[in-house]
Image 1 (cartoon, one colour):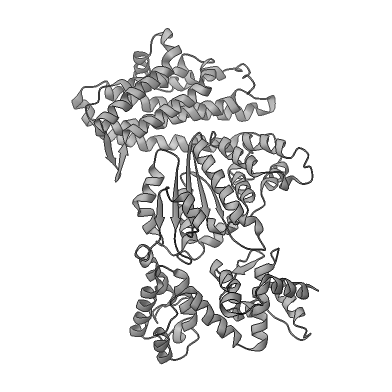
Image 2 (cartoon, rainbow, N blue to C red):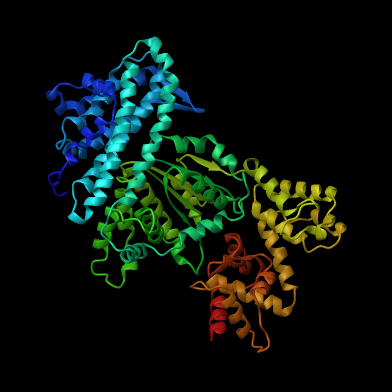
Length: 640
């Protein structure tokens, strides 16, 4: 049970009165017109609920919809959100209103009036109704923040609290101004209303600015923690370097690539939907799902709070496939806006409970249940949260269902809007869990333009200067270039990875006739492409083949990350020849682009499908030295 609020100090109680004083005299009188009786205040919020319910029933009967910015808005859903915000305010706001019962009720009186008016023009009314919903959302959110931060202060917090109070006054004045214009509009005759339609459209845009400002005030709150303590708390929650993972995923993403996804109706509906929802993007290996996930993150993060995670099946980074570690990382991302910003109260309180008895082992204290509970509590603070999970199929099978259950629980129990975006292959358990959710399958007809642009980048015209190695030393005839591009696009079937592998194989050829011949016998699958590369590695020389073999064995079984320079030293020593000295560039070269250097103290397989190919060689090609027993023995020998 929450402790009672302390009495309001100083002039905190007249916060709404201060906001009202910023309005013009005419606008102040409009609020007096809609709310004059003291006895009405006790039932005002329930009157708003009743008015919203009646208007929602009218919308349902008449099937009211409006078209706005190329999408259809169902007004019944907007009114449902208004009802949700009113109930949220009732749960918390009655306590706030007791400090200023007159003025704090003003916005709700205006909202009640707007919900009770007779509708003559559905398009105009629906446009303004969205503004009413945003105002109700702000009132509910701010009531929570007032309870958390405004009415519980210490002497050391008074300066920050006053800044926060002033920000609220500014925001509340904007809300009252917006509602006053609605009162003025709906108090006029029909002819005057039509003249004001454009003004209402502008009001919707204007209201977004105070919303952004109030969110920024979260970073101005004082948690009374030193910087060192904040970082300690964040590191205790998670040490996963998620910004680096996003940087790597976004690297080399072509301008305009993935635009087709952002234009899909399913994606637009998911973003615009007025309720918490899930969108699942799935497809075959190598179809660019991770690039799409990075695009979604970049598309959303400027307008909403985002917590994301790039899952990976990698023995050196097991935490990237474990449910509790994934959720912990999301908590860290939402715990504060930066290491210099305060830790939000739900996270700080849970941290204090979680580490009890775990002193010295704080990074092991957070459980899946802890993180799930905190993420749900954080939805009280943020107006909306978007969660992005890439490569869900790479999560450990036993953890996968637990993670899906936790994410569904967060979506289902969230106080505010939660959007969940998941990308994965079509693993059977994921299909069974998400098949009823809105989903998009990445087909060759979806991303062919992206693959065309990708191929054009890899096979530039002779007069283009790119860092990439050019076929035939940049002297590729345009007729052959066009033939290569067409062959690759036709054979890709939506797989960027397949195109990349074919380009790598063509770059080893020195004569145009050989390229022509190769185009007629390209492998149809990723597995076939990998086998061709593997055979080339085997034929590249004894020492080169052994170096590639050790590199693959290391990446298959190593339990911790190592940078490629240190691995080059280890490989040199394990060769048994004191005169042998390998370099990082030699390792990348002999492995024929099957590995990549992340530049973050680690190197890895270029794609999950590379790991799967090597793991499958025992059954399909009777090559056993990539089996766990063999790789573990090789690593033990190399480390001796």
